[in-house]
Image (cartoon, rainbow, N blue to C red; front, side, top):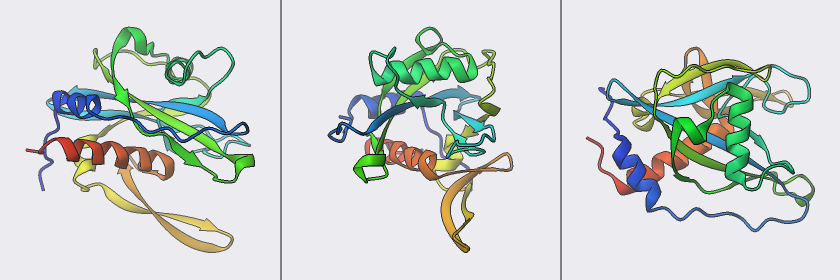
Length: 202
């Protein structure tokens, strides 16, 4: 099946009509933000993903992800967190090299109050598709993935994970021998649901 084309204009319009939902934050919740960076490449839409380096103590070690991280005291907003982390991880200054398109709903992880993390995705479109990126020690690879294929499910697979001696299967998208699953997959599904509810794919 040939992928159905997405357009930047349609994605931008869908995000402009969306009112993002943020859960009520409690005192012990940690806040984080990521940047979903998209570009048009030969009339198809792509998103930037990073393969996180294998690091002890990192719960997402070795996983596919969007650039981002935890909010700290220097950040005036969660959007600023996403932009700072993106610069630190891949050397991209979003405020200069991209257009801000909108914000998705915040995702809450670990509902127990002592461990809660609230993660907010922010969406950007890259102006220069050939800009040079520089990954830091937290990033093993930088990969571009075709959103047109993902949104219609042509790259949909199951990720096999062994937990407590039991195999479990989670949905994900294949990309260059990697699988985009878990939290990043949930963010993509939210973006795709928003796009599909506002536009008609060709």
